[in-house]
Amino acid sequence: MSLDTTTKALIEQLIDRKLAMIPVVASMIRLSNKENRLSYTNETDFIYGFVYCEILTSCLSFITSNYARIPEEEEMNEVKNIISLRMLNKKPQEHG
Image (cartoon, rainbow, N blue to C red; front, side, top):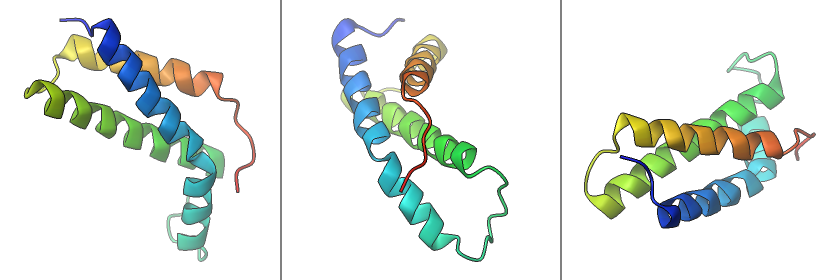
């Protein structure tokens, strides 16, 4: 089953809201990791990975709560493609 146009639009809005929060997320991660307990080497990659997972779980929750079912593999692949395209269009920059 493929995502309908309305669902895609709502998911894109959700993604854009989450991407807009990257500077806040970056600041929170920096504050909580002052002693470098998480031991990541590339902060930008870590932040974008964190945000990607947050977006993916939010999209999964959105579909599950609105359609009362677990999304099919095709739908989740579609969601992952939308997320990737949206994130690629947001240029990496220093955050915070």
